Image (cartoon, rainbow, N blue to C red; front, side, top):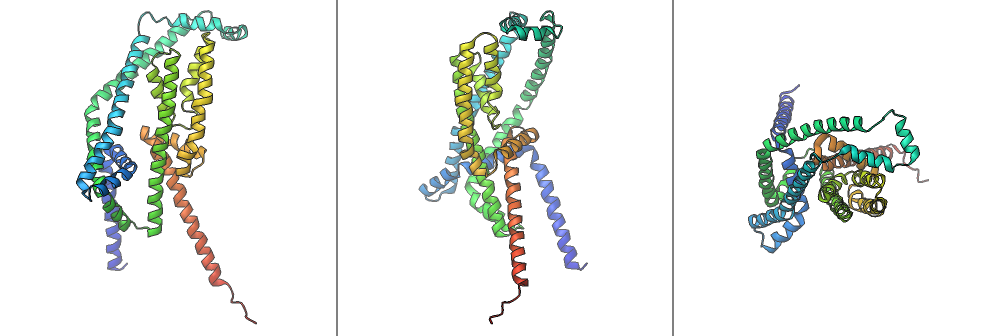
Length: 365
């Protein structure tokens, strides 16, 4: 191997090693960096308007855009999270009170069941519900320990949380201010062709917009309707269940049902048939229809992915990356489809060009 080739290979190795090391260094704050990029993409139209109105003063426009993110996203999100935590703690305290008779509630549910269902339960040799109560009490005790340990870890990670938010806002300011220059630098540094680079970057931006905006809108609508319905039916901790429905609505098709479905079943089994039918009607005809009507145009159209791919990629992303996975999962899936589409197009062009080259010339006679 010649000296220039050795030097070129060595330089590429150094580039790869330093890039991996830098990524490893930033990994503890990958969530903060991810959401800084997401907010920069979502609020880029507002920032461009401000930049034009302010005569190109980038620092001022970036500062105002950052404040808009804080007041539109950060503060409302913090208020909802605080209210969610307070309601969850209050519900946990009410359930843990000594006058909460679990066996009595289960006995009332069993008494309201049809005779054949009661006979089926008796076939399991359950003479009384005392054993059930003891097992559930043991389960709740273990769950309480888990909750306590998680609360302790959250308390210990408070400083890390604020550091992450600070990093996100700091990076977001410079993304607003220097975003166009960074985009140009990425295009120049990309080893791909200009067409491939622009296509992949465009797909990245489109998927982020569709996934975040679509899911947030659907989650807000479903959570609000579900929470109001729970409150109107007199179900305790309506805000808690509404937020849970909003979070679970990130899962297409089955999300919010995981909350209102068991609640409706409990109401029906406990003899509250009117409330149960109302909750089933609202859940099936309103909450589920919102998901079916809004998700295809808001999420599917931007990602250009089938619903089953969005569902599987979202579940995989949530399993691997936590809450950030509802963005990362569909993003990876969309980039996978985009890259393979480009590959197939290039292969088709190469095949056609080769066929045209090898074609015999037509005799004019």
